[in-house]
Picture (cartoon, rainbow over the protein chains, first blue to last red):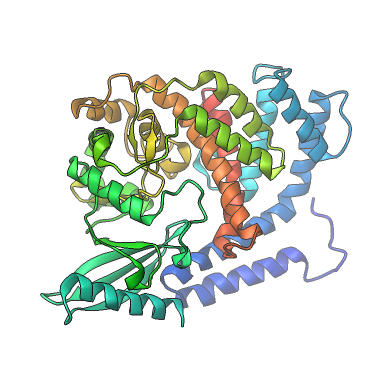
Length: 126
Length: 333
């Protein structure tokens, strides 16, 4: 479902994969202690960005569709819709018990965690 | 001078004050971990080498980047008071002053054991330690909470309501809409219990900050956000899903059950009004706090206070707490 890159090959995902593989397999074995810890985080960051490129656009689109259903009168981009939902929670006009709210928030959080930490154990509780 | 040169010169002065003119510091190395503090390990050679830890404010700065941190000298005084009350705590041997040239810092004895959560939760050598650890943690917290007030340095008071206000204000200052956080703040306003009593609260009692050996809990480390407040906070923080390190079935730190934690707490004289219900409500708040903290720590990167990749990346851990909050609020966790 990924659109072809306007820059052709190598695309962003391939570049990230190459950089991550270098850091992980070549550079990291030479690092120790504090430096090794930050090196591992750097590898993880590249994997997050790669997953965001692949999974981010469809997740954002699905979130937007759900928000438009929950907030029929609301307009604007994803940020504006999220702000509107926050305002309704703060005012008590929508709650966890309102139809569709819990499902929307669970699915949205899970989609995000699948990008940012696909191994996170709580995903198995869905 | 590099960081290591500054530390080596400072530790040279410190060990001469600690152990006499012949003493020298060796095997100086920086340990990873420690959000707003530098942690260095070193040995003192004199009457046979002995291991020590230097805890120092980031870059020796007098004020830590974390607004809640109480400062290194106060932290050292809290550790001494809690240790004197029978709590498992490290032994502070030297609080640094201007003469040492290390900025805000103190030296404590290095304890043997393991702090890395995943090893404690998975390695066979810790199997029997894990079995009794929830009760031990309950007992340790009861002793921390029993530290007499008159032995403590002045500390900030912070209960659930104060923290809810503070974290909600922080969240608002980020100006980035997080509907789950907003919902959780609203929910907790009416669900957080009133404090059972006021005690010393460790504030960061969880795996990663606990020294564990094959027999169990050796000491609670990382006292930098100690305060006065509701003791239920300490029992709940170790139950926060992010601090279960993947073992979601074991609510206490990924290794134990809440009943054992509370039994251990009661048996060691812990307050009877610290109930499982109070701990569960505070656990929801624990996830929310950790989520806001992740965004706050990322701010240190954004504002150039700490340009490390770790500070940048931690902002992306906020989503795990959104998932956990929803699972907790819908009874799935």
